[in-house]
Length: 80
Image 1 (cartoon, rainbow, N blue to C red):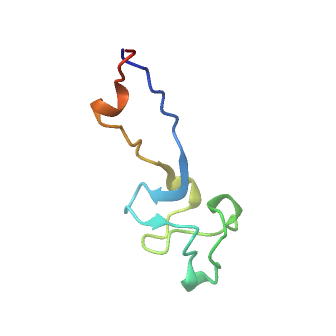
Image 2: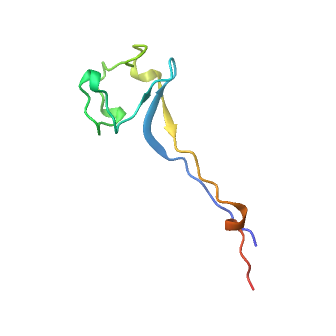
């Protein structure tokens, strides 16, 4: 018997600049601009810009966690 596995998109908290590809990681913060680790992207000041290309916050997109797909044998079980 096969079972259906549903995956939900999980927000990693990281954001990628759509212009240059820089990734803001809240676990690291932005030491060049005195942003401490642990500060979520949404709480960055409105005037914060990408440290690489200087584009604004709205140029960043959410990075979602890649789903871990179990091996087929883990999705199958015998009802005997």
